[in-house]
Image (cartoon, rainbow, N blue to C red; front, top):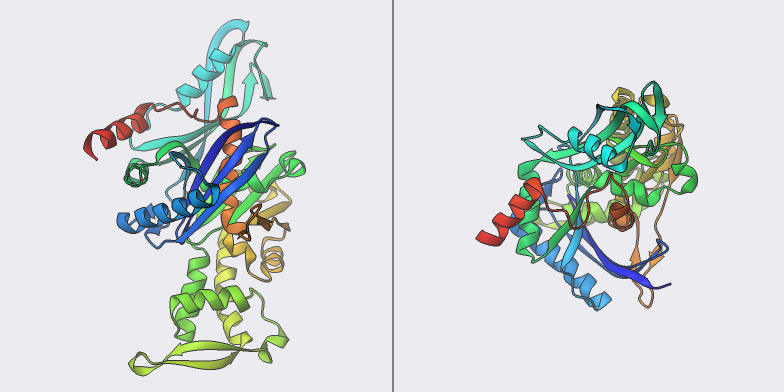
Length: 407
């Protein structure tokens, strides 16, 4: 099968930047050519707070992926995340006078939902279901006769300054954005299989700075919520509780951390580089229970917040009987059992354990958003819900023009 094109995706999170380069094939498959990863602390809850730090992290991640793929990146799909990303269901109807519905009618109807958003930029406008007169739940009304044509659209928006700064940062790295994707949406696209997409599904992306909750109806992204806590909060608790550096706290969490405390943890000893007076570091033995007793309360807080967000959403607790958990935080030992006990739903952990062909590089759940944008790139040009790669209208066009003229 011949390759369709080469696609590059860039996931800019609160703890890291991930870059993936892949060959996309005509049948929808993609083959990873290269990946890059760089730690980054210049983003807080999805908002860039240090342009220089983020610029360097993007450049490093992209350069690493380029060298592995032997490919020069010019354009990217980029993620956007955080508590400022809002999802809202908008209802719109149109009187077409008892004639046959056309594709142009659908485009006009969806465009009408996008008006009067002066303070925010729309990154997704996804039609969920249509109505034809008194008939509801129509997936595709084209070809039907209707007087009144209606639609429910999931409108995903971000503050214009947040998007503006993201695009400027990409421009400083000589990268052109061809699509901006909500990170929770991208994660869901990658981890859901055909069975998951056949019904209602909730996807929780346990990230570094935030935890996003995405709702999918028959595979369509229909809503999202965000909890402003993530894996970085757990790392901070460990650093404070054990009086160690953030780097060592992250390593302890990765190697020995668990969201549950067992009796055996009292006997299992681990080494912690404790910071003493005068900044002297002393390697001390502590029981694993001391570590996990710090981790569990924060995990419980995050999962209870997720449960509350699901309950308060327009979809409610009964929307889905199961939850898919992905993201870097999903790698924490015991997270499945902890989530099932708090959310009272069947938990599915979709783990990524793939190696790049011809290398020893392994990728895990930190890359679920970057890989999800690969899926997004395959479907965006064939779906009215997605912005087209060549489309640079409205605010995006103005920002790109400003960048070209001033930077």
